[in-house]
Image (cartoon, rainbow, N blue to C red):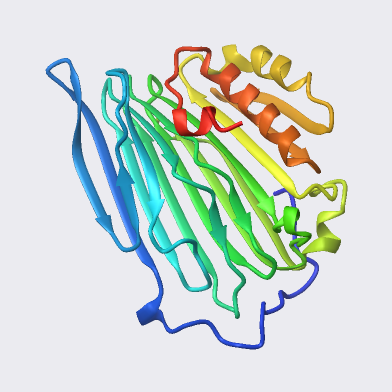
Length: 290
C-alpha cells in the first residue's frame, strides 16, 4: 500500500449526485480466440455508454478501442470490463481518448477491470490517460489472471487534476486495488488510497511527491523478467521523471512520477516499447500520439 488517508473524505460539492436511474452502468465483455490459423472474436457484449471499436489490424492481434459515448464518468457511474485472450490469441485494448472522472457530490465512480490470458495468449491494456477532476471520487479494481505460458502487458497514466487549466486534485477520494495471478498463485497485490485533503497528502515523499502525473507499467508472464534491464535502461534517460522498475515472481513492475506531462509520456512510451521487446503488438492510436 503506497498511501493511506489521515481522515475522512470531503464531498465534492454541496449538491447531490444524480439518481441511479440516470447514471452510467456500462458492461463490456470481449473474448478473442484462434481458430483455423486466424484470430476471431468469440464473444462481444456491450451494455451502457461504452462501445468497442475495431480498427484494422495485422493478423498478429485483434485491436479494440474503448469509446465512451457519455463523454466521461461521474459520481455513481459504473464500468465493468472483462477481456480474455484464449489459447494462442492476442488482444490489444486501448481507448479513443482520455477518460475524465468528474467531480462528485458524494457518490463514487466505480471501475472494474478483469483481464485474462490463456496458454500462449497475449493481452495488452494501454488506454489513454485517466484524468481525475478536483473532487472526483474513484474506486477501481484491477484483476489480472494469466496462464504461466500467457502474457499480459498493462500500462496506464493517471493525471491528478486538470493541470493545464491550473486545477489541482485538492479534495476527493482515489482507491485503487490491483491483483495479479499467474496460474493459481497470487504474485502481486497493491492497494492505494488517498482521501480528504488530497493535495496535502500527495506532497509526501512516500506518496506522489507533489507530482500530478503518474504512470504504471506491468509485464507479466512468459520471459517477463528478461525485459527488466531494457525497461530500466529506457527509464534512465528522461530528466524530470522519477522512475523505478523491479522484477518479482514472473513479472516486471515500473512506476513513473513527474510534474511534467510531456516528460512523463515520453518516458512511459519508452518503457512500453522496451517491455514489448518488439514482439508484443501495441496500439497505434496510443503509440503515435506524441
